Length: 503
Image 1 (cartoon, one colour):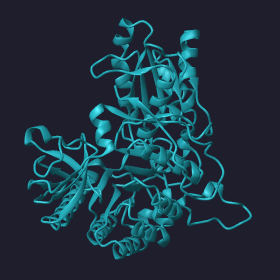
Image 2 (tube, one colour; image 1 turned 90 degrees about the vertical axis):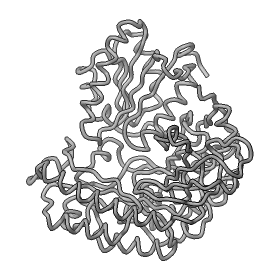
Image 3 (tube, helix red, strand yellow; image 1 turned 120 degrees about the vertical axis):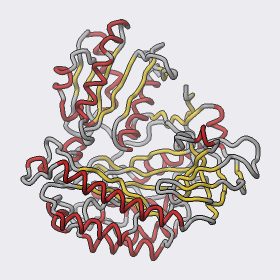
Image 4 (cartoon, helix red, strand yellow; image 1 turned 45 degrees about the horizontal axis):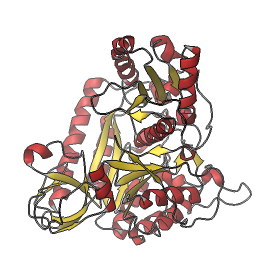
């Protein structure tokens, strides 16, 4: 640890996807290694870092609006600093400082590790420091991470994307896909498990293309690399749940389905983006699969794992989408019977090919189609959830998932298939029930977005994750590996990880 930030407090505000959430854990780890401390709830931090997203609608307006709110705060607090990083910073670059000259540091998606040095340079030079790299400086795993959860952790297996979907700006901001070495990934998973973490989610823009960046150019690419990684996770003792997001239908292979079905700690859950059920629209989106292939994958997954929960992403109102195209999407939704769907109304993203396409759909039409899709999906979700009433499920108790838990006297947890379950914390309990503990309950009721278990808890297993939550600590994992190259896949020897106080 150095003393660049000694005595100074920090806050990281995160927008966007899981990758951004995980990047923020890296930023927090870097700042704490530099001597900063996390600001207490309600405390105005000496440093505010915005980790931005360029994918969400009106991302620019949201960022600059939030930045403007800090102008009077900064005027009253000499020495306060503001930093802007992430995808919007990568896209806008010098524009951030032009629009918000009170910002001290702007950094991109490829140089997270530069933040402490840029903050120090900005203080010394008394001017804004902007550093945006065009390619990855170092894989994020080479940075420390201050984790947000005592019981679940994100582990990035790759960054960037080689696809060219016409609606997506991610490849131009995150770059081409770069994969981590399997040994480094498994070492990070082991480090989390050593600290009591029970559940790990493997992250990548396209996880099932894993291995493409370290393939030998003189030999055929090992298309089984991701399945091998899943199986290797199955050999880590104490790792109870493994999830991953997101695969791409075009590269989804049978060996991944087999690995999911035969590796006990890989959860029976699959999130696979559909985007559209119309083959014509999929072609315009440059999605290199068609609806029949998508449905074929789902059929194979359910044959191997009949009770798997399958979720998806769908865009409504892509340029040129006709009513016939939209009906094709509804048809696929009816056949797929998704557990849930993240549905989006198409909106222009500057810098993407779709933003320049003709036949942009009027907002009123998009809204009406969106409402019909939501109604259909909620009907299907309720029907599928209702099938679970009377069944016994294992829950990992969570925090923050139940917005009405306080008024309903319930707690919340996630089933192995990812479904949210609200339950009453009474029954066969072994002491206090904490987030991170594992229980079994019987489902008593169903709704479109959750299940309810109001009968007494059947079993309660106290865990190290629950102990950590009770003490208010979360793991702080050390830098791991260099992120480039390919050793053989295998389970690493246990390695210690430093614990940090979640103050």
